[in-house]
Length: 411
Image (cartoon, rainbow, N blue to C red; front, top):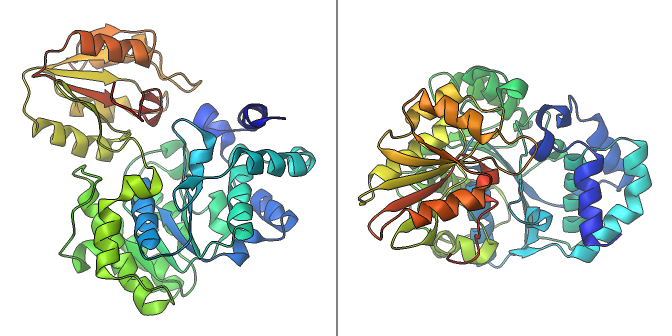
């Protein structure tokens, strides 16, 4: 199979949370352990940092990788989901895994995948570990896919664990309270491995402390320990918390491991995240006059910060291109959106996408008004047609809405 056929097979043959949601969620780590054994346990041959959290784990992972690259290390980076191409998930020093490696890996192990009903995510994790081990990376930043305790990445023993924050999201898997979700994320805390907590609430802090104590793991609350951060090319307001988390992580790596990262490396790495790692879709500007911003924020906590940031902008009219997936708690999310905006409702082009008419109807009950469109592209085009140079266009609501935009160029 060529690359397109290979990735299509991966996406279509087996459960993929990005497309299908609940049916793709595995209830234990049996399968991924079986796969790791089959691959000769590549995850045991690499040093890792493990990053979990409701929001910010992608940005934090990319910041960590960028800084380590600035320090001269060969850095693997595994993140999800991808926006344009599957290979975005697996990078070394910002360069995506080759199409050939993906094709050869799947061809070599396809019969094993089929015989053991491997999920899309399990295959992807196995591929990442195999690639990083064969390429002999100095260190790999491994982002959790969903939750923590039962996530396929959770077979690693990292140098340090990082949990960015806890918010209400993916309640059908992780629970519907902050305490339950924190317990799932805290599942990445390992015996005697230090853990950095980015943000906490009165509900989540005791959960983290209890899990760390049970595992004899040192725990560090970055929001209490870090007062100074540095500028970054990731300019969303929410990056302030992520930067503190990153600074604290390097304090621990410098003190407790052989990795040495200077203050200059940290400053330079934070300034060049996009250049070093290729991160897309985080308060990303796609145009000016009118200013166009897209962001992958998709739950209450993330959207709250982004929508507050929009209010700091100067504009005459606000245009919001909005689409969501069908498992979002709209009663939690829609009240956050401003009523004095023109909305362009659309459906992201994945099976989980919520129908634009349903979104429009629900939004109308919160006094959010606008028309529906057949695609993200059509909605975005119409928003530009209706805008003057002094207006502001925001596109978001879902990672998968942002994925359909022309992210690599102004448009």
